[in-house]
Length: 301
Image 1 (cartoon, one colour):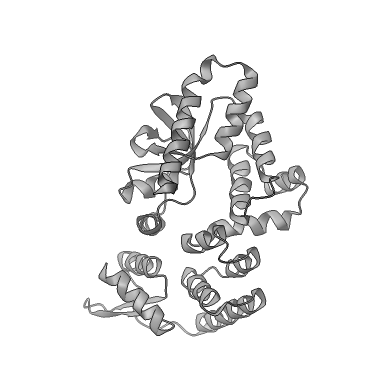
Image 2: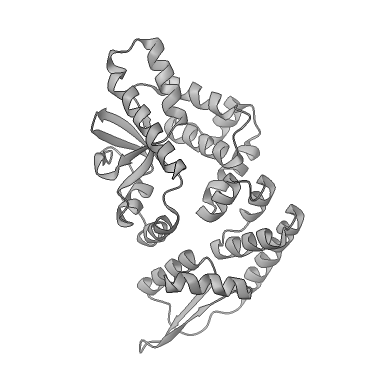
């Protein structure tokens, strides 16, 4: 409840700043840009419109459904970025896929960073200054790197030069943003370290990431043991991929979507088979009795 009230208070403060921005001197606008770059406002999803000049027009259906399922469970973790058009209307700058998935999930409000019309240079300085703060966690640093790249049109190379960091360091941080929301949340709340998160990001399989993450929490695994476990799972996956494919026909796209949605929702590997007559089976993997109980609770919901 306290966190929710705090978010509302921050949102009100941001709206108050925006209401008076047009009449403020340049010095005051710089202060406003810094405030907007570091704080998130909750905006009605209906008040946000897409950018008609956005080059990306199509979004993968399965990926949207998977993200929508995740948002229903965890909420939208990574805020979108919008440009203020007027006191009641905003236009997307980045995060259209997240915005579309939130619409599908039935979310009424989304967290958003608000930008002014012509604040590019000031925004870049404010974000760089924000990254240099000592109290930021690894996920917050990663997200600020992503914002710099998306909103200030920077490449990995340019960003590494601006920040005085190796390009590999920037890449390692950005990979954290591809982790499932549950793991991102664990990193933000210091349940795991940056080293653990980097090891988990070494696998592209979400189900594997979540299984190993639960082992890290339950068994208090070190970073080295986490890396070894990820490597072990990866080797098994590689061996499985080298086996000859069965003669059965390929799974229709609709069934692939069902399987991927189940994997995302349950946080574990799910197998789905179907023959030409429409008969088949679903296999749900679990790693322990506790994991089975967790899955059963999700199914009951």
